Length: 135
Image (tube, rainbow, N blue to C red):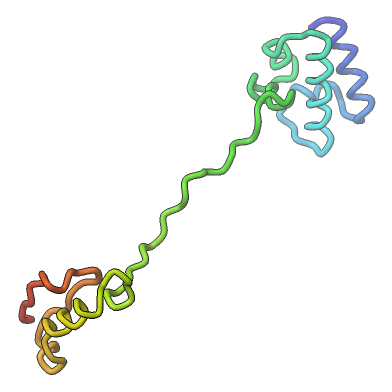
């Protein structure tokens, strides 16, 4: 480590009141992350490469890039989440005309007979639905 890097680390550690050995450790105190960021920015301003800064501070190179502002946090997914499909009945759909609705109603058996038939699934096209008796 260069004498200039030692000087920067000493100055920042006295300012934030942390021990210089803690900078390269795995500790996570309340002042340590800000001290590491400050040291990173000062070393980068003095011309130190990011790979060397990562060795001095004991962090990954991408962490150093994040400290310097070259990387940003991951953005949330732009793809919408899956949701249960909304099924509309034939009667609420505007595509069915009044005449076609009457024709479809004529194909449906009366309520007394419907109890013995399988119910059509939602979204079934009624004119082509094959009515089957329940077993």
